[in-house]
Length: 193
Image (cartoon, rainbow, N blue to C red):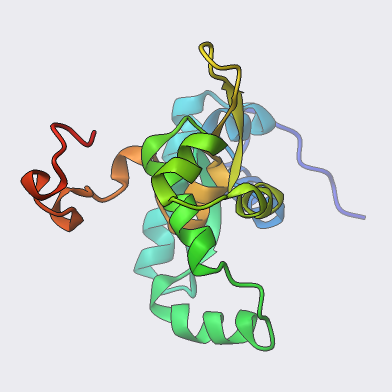
């Protein structure tokens, strides 16, 4: 029978801490904040971050098929980007559950204008988005983010799962829209922000 790992920051071997960290990351189904990992290991957050960064370097140096990355507010193990085609083919074989163009457009509006009401998204897109918003909510890409104080409308925002799926750590990493917009004079608008 194997002995269970007990967090012992003062006498635990680094290999034991690293092994425990890897074990947690292997079973995590969503990104885990460094603070939660540190608490699970009984370590200061700074030391847990050192272990995480050491694993990142080790995995890259040894050309593994996976990486450790901080995305969506936490740390998680992902397949290496260089194997994206192979992994994508494996996972998507036979699956047809992709987002429609309408869902992608709606998701983009929410991502760039959040928090935003369903009515405001409909006004921007020019179509009713009720069913699309339900789909995005069901898939965990958007969620309720309070209410508009002026109208009482429910506001929506993207989720950490959205960030994880598109490979960003924060919304600040979204690409700027300005290069894709028509000239403001053509729209007759003063400010599109």
